[in-house]
Image (cartoon, rainbow, N blue to C red; front, side, top):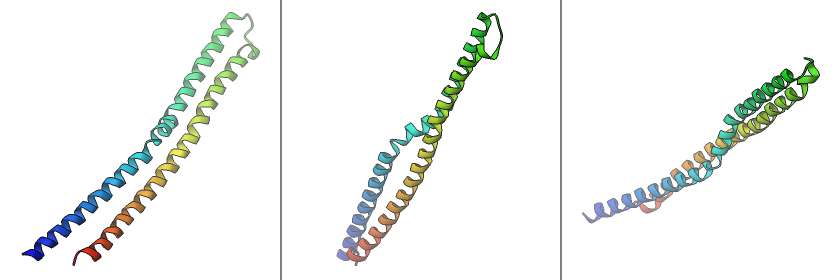
Length: 132
């Protein structure tokens, strides 16, 4: 009976180690994911903010056209160029953010797999040395 009690205690110890490894992995992944929210938000929202700036700029350009007597390209060109700059700024923020987000998410997947493999190997070593 004492041998089965010791075996149960050793199995319980291994379960505790397994839980500790899982908890440490979850905490580390949570810590690593913290900065990716900003990247994801920037990647998805920046094009719309740029588009809003574009629409606003074109509306302003045409409003300015209504106040001028001549309807030439010179009357609307400054407003349209400002509107297109808003689009470019939105894309200049969104594209690098999307690339960075995808890069970091891939790195986290690789890191997560490495932590899983470490945990499995560690538990195997612990099982071999402590469970008789």
